[in-house]
Image (tube, rainbow, N blue to C red; front, side):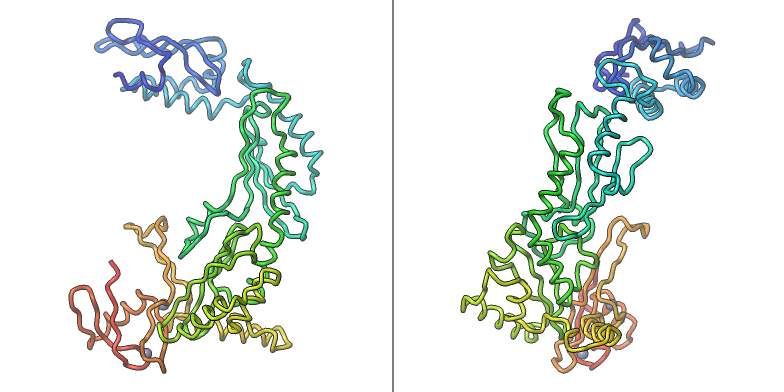
Length: 418
Ligand SMILES: [Zn+2]
Ligand SMILES: [Zn+2]
């Protein structure tokens, strides 16, 4: 029965046998006097909880629940942390009267004044307790950004935390799945100030965030241009924080481009990696290296322009068509040549959780490509595996399947996905 000592250093046994505990429990940053009387074995006395007037005020509406929990209490520490969690969730700042945290009306009045400064047109939504706000703000280039603000209960003693999608300065090489993408969302956190007079106001922080977004105008327009003019196949829905794109080149070849410095996107040559059948991708690689070696990269023209000078096939063909309907068809056909020849999709998301849960997502792209150059079709490894496994002519050696391409009967092998 000593586990509580770590979490509740201010509570100690008050008798030899450990049936009475006295001390202080902290609820929402306020310490309250508490006394617990546990039931003695072989006696009919029930457990009792005593405490300061304030504590009893908080507890009283939930007296019966807390009493039954205390009666079944096996471990004082567990009961105390349970009690603390319950009381912290149910007691709003308005019921607690304490010295360290400002009364709630003052907090609300301050937040309302801040919202007036910021302008309600920018406010998208907020929660009932005024802890979380979502703002929609336009940057210099007229792009709409979603900015989230979390206002701590101790506000204005503690500064708000602002989250916006700002490009990360780190390089992203290789695949990034959706779960990892969240990390690139930059957080503007300020140091906690201990005085009311120099706290970081919500409006000041929001201004700073907008300034930061304005500093990335060239980066945002560079990425917008890539999304509009090239055949981006990944990410599906790029966030403003994403500094990379995977772009289709045709013939199951693609390239992944990563901006080195988002604050000056064309100053440095971006990192470019190629994917696809070795022979098919070679001309693209050669063209790119020739372009770089001949020092043809020009920092003063746009990234898309540089890229199309090196590799004209990154462009969508929409400039050759006049009607939107035809453009869509053309784009569709272009994208189809990147898709898996079995399931006709580009991205295959599979759940790999034991119970089929979607916690662990595994993404596949059609990177297994038939080596017959006339065929050159691409398959998701798992689609090809399933196809070969169901084919009676397929042979198996350990975890490798040897069979033939579903289209051209060329020999094709695939490792089992474990
Ligand atoms: Zn597939
Ligand atoms: Zn084939």
